Image (cartoon, rainbow, N blue to C red; front, side, top):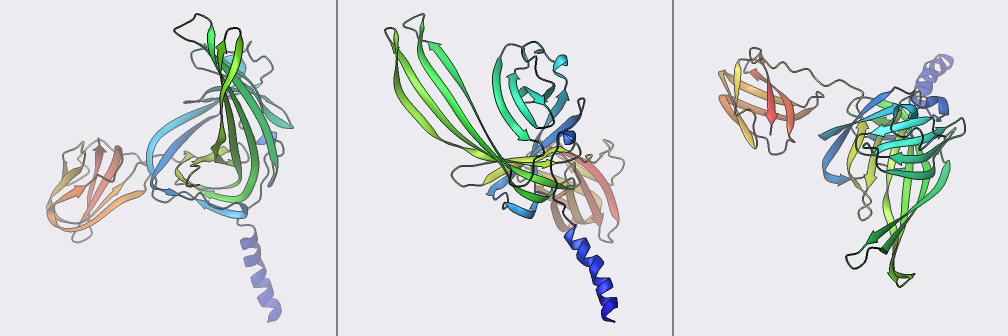
Length: 344
């Protein structure tokens, strides 16, 4: 009997041990050229803690997200961009909707960012930042630095008379491994912490000489990135406020498909007015409405209400602008159909 108990318990033990897997990131885990990723930014009503560092952690960001916007990231060949001759050593480009085109030398040992270019082809920045080492494992660290100088003309002279020198120091460390849960799915991951310390020096020109006027230095905060293997890339990011040490939003990779909502109103026996709505709408039905549910495009319930009337007013001030799906049931729990709701 003891032997039988041991045999039964061992599979359960191994299931628990391997529920989360400690991964490492290799160069072969980076997404191939031609890959595309969509990222959704989820804003929260209050500041929240992004979770602890350490081994075998669970970071759950599936609770009460309010979706604000979607951004796309493309993996490109540098030859297909506007800057193949500006960054001739680059063999990898990551283009983001808000951050321009980032150029890298990607090899088996590391990913080195060598430059940044704007979408209009006018502005470039030479860099030398080791973004990640391969293989990247739990507790590995990396340091890099970059600086830039800006000179300005004043109204009193046609020569440069003001100068601003930026210096940034970055420390990256893999401070945790475990599982991240997004509204779409769950993933085994490494968490990367990026700390940023900056120094700015302000100069003014007197005659032919530059005089140092002031120095401003301090932490610019930090952010976290959750990395997956096998081409999953960066699953989520969160920036941290330096005062509260908390965040008010997470950008996560959109790996699920939004709900399909039929524009037709024939699938429901109730009406919504006004639609689009701003602060409230009224639902009207010939049948007695017992239960109302509102879901976002990803199927998550954002509002529920019980009632016992043929007409009910719903407050929508807590909902972000966007498209939602409204469903209702009658007093016999029979579906009254569905309607698309637009919040302006």
